[in-house]
Length: 318
Image 1 (tube, rainbow, N blue to C red):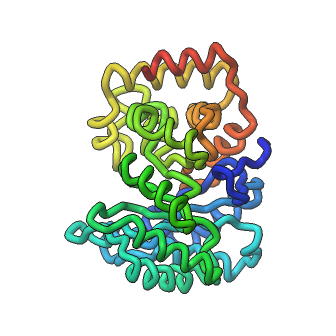
Image 2 (image 1 turned 180 degrees about the vertical axis):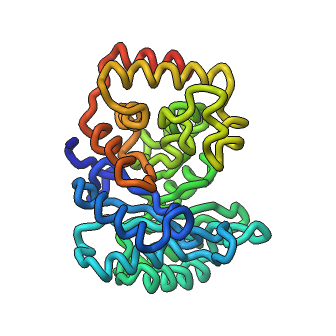
């Protein structure tokens, strides 16, 4: 397994693959979630990412279900200090609500997250969605207070414009207050342009870690979809087909299969290994609903793609 990498210049160290907790309370109930989390930890991984509003989109849910399941697992299994626990604040709790990163709101919501997660601290607390009507200093000072109180170790940002990200980082430096150590962008072998054109340079210049979400493009890069008929076998197939099944998408899955076959690993492992080969990336976020899905996680962190394989993937996804 790869050595641990740091998030930017902070001392927050993680095994370089993060479990995405949006499946808890959605496609996995509590019992199944416990089994997946046990298996993930047993494989040597230690980082879990969730959000305070997961999984509000499921009928009957109100948000907070994912944090509750993770908290119950931590309470039942113990070993909190062995886990890098990441959650987010500011996202919507319904389609009629809007992002909120007011200082007072952040301080209220951290208490709810700590209660649900059954812990007294969060390793990485992240701005899920930004609200540009709120001054960045207000948001950052709230985070700074939480760090001073010991409730949060580090902070990061996810869905934020490059301009607001730079403003936030500059404000932190100027005011001597808490600073984002990580960025969680959408980034994968298909969705490349936004991160590479708008954020990659910032991540290098400001020395912040990058932990991409949708690392497998909602499952499109898992090798499950290689022909038109495959999309009818999945509940989400129609949406995935609409977004990804075009000439470029077909080139990418063909190249993934060729590279995967050459290494005798899964397409998922290659897609994740490609992300890990990107200089800016600290660790990708990926989910699983079955234990065998995590075989790809193990393959990915030990797979070093050679120059020819990387070139093939670069060309297909260009």
